[in-house]
Image (cartoon, rainbow, N blue to C red):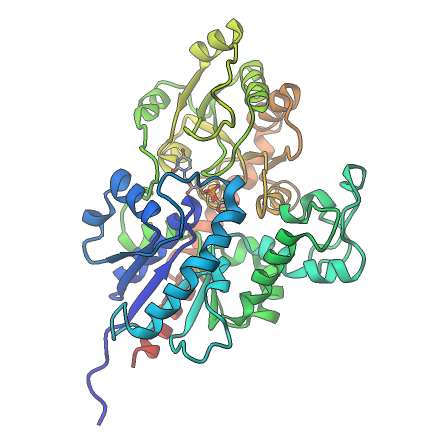
Length: 470
Ligand code: UDX
């Protein structure tokens, strides 16, 4: 005779970066609301930052928070420049411990399944018979970038890669199914910007990506109306797909009240909300380059001049570790000081979801990270995309050329382009972009409402996890 059905218990393990932790904590919160027990696994560094700045222990009393070492000291820098080093350390130090913990019942004998950041596929070997728990992959980036990643081996085989230097960057890529004549070389995922296809980082990422479809199932933070045709292509390789985004918006539906992301690794400066309250509707361009982008002083100055010269009001997030070599003396010209005093406001870290939904904000100058892109879409705000690396290069092309939600400024970093593109979005082409942004925001909200595609897929995910626990 069968016993009582066990309550499902899911272990969630994100890559230790803000964008990944943010969306996986939201998934954890959603699953917890559905009655599922959550163990949330973090590196000591992420856990320290989250407990310190976001009080996650008291906000999620039902979660079992656990930590696992990434093999790096607490004060090791965690920006994109150290990405390869961080991942390599996971491979050598974290992987054996994680496997041992999984097979020894460290997370509890009731563990049903694991939701692993899909970038971490390396952490468990698909063919490892000792690991009995089904592993769901959660790819926290856009479907369009996942599909572009998946097509890279074919691009290499067809001779479309490598990119032959700067003069080759505008060549059209013709053989990504569903994206024919859309992507230029410069729009391919950032790691494709190598002149040798044997480049170790390219090879490593390709290996990771090809493993995406070895998961029990794949979860994506997107929605059908945004990326339907691309999702159909991905389903040919990963038929068991749950498309449940925008997660922050689905969470609002399930909680039946307004909520804001509080999963910050930095201290939030809320003073910018009061500053926004005093600005006219639609007058402010919000500027943020996400959690791991870095830039030199020269780029910073070009952005600064461009923003002041644009004549628009601006709210700019300058993270404590945004600028490389910031100890070098830089002289700030008087016109920048003056222009900022008149029209600007700067913070180290903003309450971004609240900022984007504020009526004073008329546009978003963004690095095109996927969370930022989805948050802008839900808030109905057009974008100026200064994509920096990885998936962001594909996202920005889709924002400008497919979804028509703004302009793509990738690979330009001069004050004239900044001022021009900001004004394109805020003034010259405002109506056109606002129309498509409003339409897409409505579609996003519909997808996470009862009857919507993401709402239904999330319920299917919960049911499937319940079935696994029986
Ligand atoms: C990283 C990669 O850069 C990105 O390409 C990938 O899509 C996800 O992982 P990140 O740089 O952190 O992401 O950008 P993004 O995905 O946009 O996530 C940043 C998160 O931090 C957003 O949820 C945003 O709301 C939040 N944020 C950012 C704040 O809350 N305040 C800020 O001041 C800036």
